[in-house]
Image 1 (tube, rainbow, N blue to C red):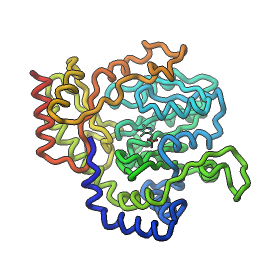
Image 2: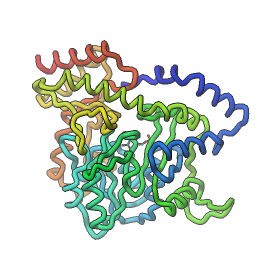
Image 3: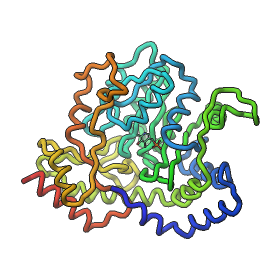
Image 4: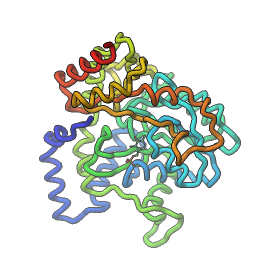
Length: 379
Ligand SMILES: *Cc1c(COP(=O)(O)O)cnc(C)c1O
């Protein structure tokens, strides 16, 4: 599914040199690499504050802590996402409110958000799933109308650009009140271990967050709020610094592979290709409207599970993200949910399949993958 070795070959000298310096200076935690990476990422995203932390799950949790959300506050998020999003809501004793997604983009359905709002709703967490932003124009309108925070889960869409209906372009993660991202190795900007970051344009919130990541300390050994210990280490920051200047190139390669996949799969009965929206047409050349963290097809003729088996036999990796709706996961079942309110997610879990997608895919691999899939689905 991913090939991280090719990327390493290209940045080997820089990474190895940085690692040597870090090892020789023992600046493992909060070293200069972390600070430089923070600044460079702020510039890249066009966001005022980046607060590095230990992983994407922590980033989501710390964002919610920083906003002062309290037990019992309701937080609306998507039924079709990785569990980390809902996990931190539950851990903080906030009330997760799962809602359905849209069948074309797999992203949270703004109309379902509106229906789920109560007097206890405090925040919306849109997940920019598979590399494409949720409909932020409408989500921001809803949030403003109901006085809600918008926390972007940007773990899968770093580098993506969102074009608002007024034509304004912003980087994913720089749009809501606060955003969380992950530098897990397989993410579009991946470290060689765990890492994450929180983004915000709000000076006061940024200050609060910087304390929370460091045991609630704003002055050494003065603990003003309950915090956590969540740090990006210098070795990971060095890797991320080497990769950040290449992120646009990485994402362009992913889009290029997605175009080739699309060209092969469009007009094949039983296969639906991923849809790119948000005021862009197709996979455009001019902006990073979709950064294809995953390239995900829908197999609409009931052959998805058989296809997964067939690909395994042919030695082609694939993934089903995600096989079970969150509202049906044991940890998150709740009387408040009515299964009939999740028709899209319930259908998607039966149809989706994600194909190999990384920066080292070549034409021959793509041809083998597309021919194998088309041969099986249309047989
Ligand atoms: C990867 C991911 C996370 C969690 O990131 P970690 O760094 O693994 O903790 C959260 N949300 C989504 C949507 C993700 O894909």
